[in-house]
Image 1 (cartoon, rainbow, N blue to C red):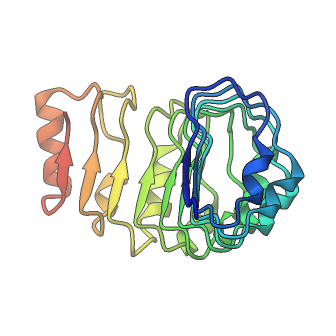
Image 2 (image 1 turned 180 degrees about the vertical axis):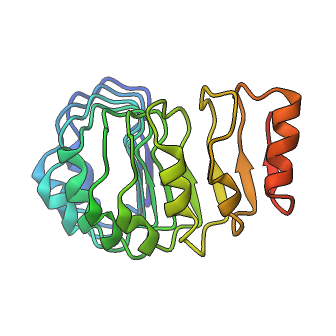
Length: 219
């Protein structure tokens, strides 16, 4: 009857595939291991809803992960994933929350919009320059865009302004002293996290005036 399992802070180098045969498992936590290989047998999970593989050494995702039709939350923060390796994730039709923070991503596929149920995505701490145009078709409520030093912010703001459902945006450590043009277009957003930035008091005041109805957190 086991439904949750926590195997964090161990020395697994491969995904413990034996877990897949525990038919009632819904939540698997495996952060801070040394996992670099995940077998295609991961598709044997029948009821898994949440999978956390943060801070491992994963650079490839098995194709059969797309068979996990019950998976709602997937966290792959702090791994070695590149643009091509994450494309298979666009087939996880019931995914609601996806964390790809701190990987080796430079772009996101236009196919991301296939994730019709996705409401929360974190793309922070990558080398992404532009978001895909198709993101404006999504029903996101929250997006993480922290520490993206190469991001084209004006274009990003234009795309995000088209997502009517968007309520929360994280943009920490932008490493800029002035908010780029277009920020004022995000009138639907209720909360901004702008921590660890270089804005002085005058710029903070200007930013707040751009979107007076939003809650803007600078620290």
